Image 1 (cartoon, rainbow, N blue to C red):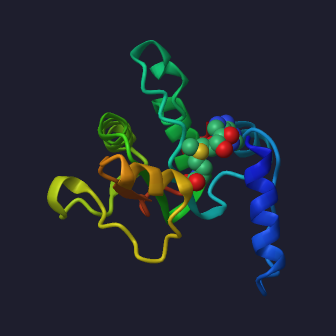
Image 2: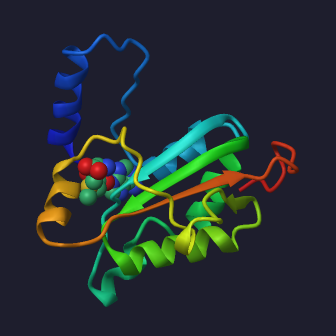
Image 3: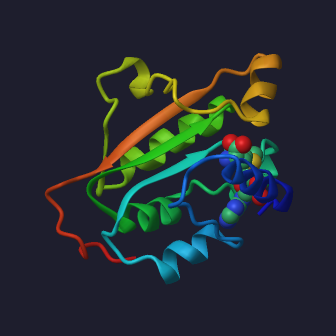
Length: 156
Ligand SMILES: C[S@@+](CC[C@H](N)C(=O)[O-])C[C@H]1O[C@@H](n2cnc3c(N)ncnc32)[C@H](O)[C@@H]1O
């Protein structure tokens, strides 16, 4: 958790007319596991999670089978899990992990490679900007929770 990032977001919120935003300072995994009811979220977005590019550090990556099972279990049927990264091998890992999760289906499965075209609405953060400057391709993924699973199934 990066406190200057939270502070910047608070300042942007103060300049906006949004009134329905809650920020939580802490571990997103604990939050999902302990504070979010299964089947209750309309969507989860994970943009540019820490890439841990060194091979010996890859086990620290957020997007792993157990985490994706937890995230999928918290989505309402039909709700989306949207991921983006500028590290191609992490993007490939994300796609493989999500495709292996039986609660999820790739909403962009008909697109080349199963990648979602970059949504124009996403603000370009400094991480995405740096990736562009350094020539790294951005990959987006969108998975939906299957609607034929009742909420509460596959509790994690
Ligand atoms: C590379 S930055 C990307 C930030 C932002 N999503 C963006 O696109 O600009 C990754 C962020 O994830 C935060 N982070 C990593 N693991 C986390 C976790 N388990 N819970 C909450 N935040 C986490 C880090 O502190 C860091 O601020």
